[in-house]
Length: 213
Image (cartoon, rainbow, N blue to C red; front, side, top):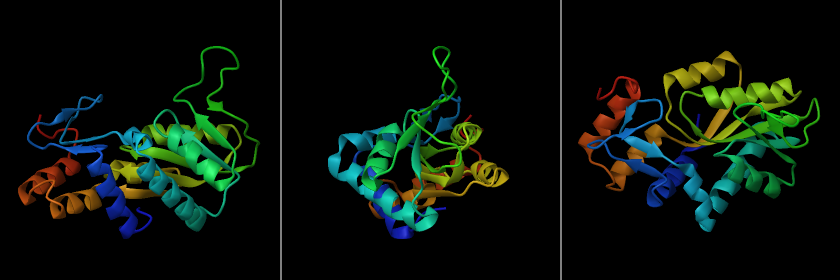
């Protein structure tokens, strides 16, 4: 769920302004998964715009403290959420760790990088939620390292039903700054897309794996 509607609309507008989110229902993108998609999201672009990255950082800080209380540690999911996670941790005066997709093949073979003590309360920061699988693998790695997961905060979610089910299954609370439905409403209001294109984009969300195949 979103932290609040005002933040969701403002975040969506900023992401569209800097082309962190691109909407192109007439000429779809191809995801790494093979899905055809009328939307492409690269939230790492946020880091290149100081005013916007500061807004995202401040909204994370305010809402993390409100929803989860102040944790002991902020964890970022590699690689997309490392940058913004560090900014959030710095602003909150907290330690930061990040989680690799899998353990290193050499050295200490760490998957969680940084200093983390067993029993510490952790809020996980993520940039983007699709199915939630990779995000929840990071949560599992943190739990195996002894962390107490308070929840996850992400910049954006597509709002797929499978993601909601996956988070419920493992009892992890997820809050996001913005989501797909708020994005589409804002995109129509600001004339980024037409009403007809909004309908196409809404249809994609219902069956993304088979859309436009």
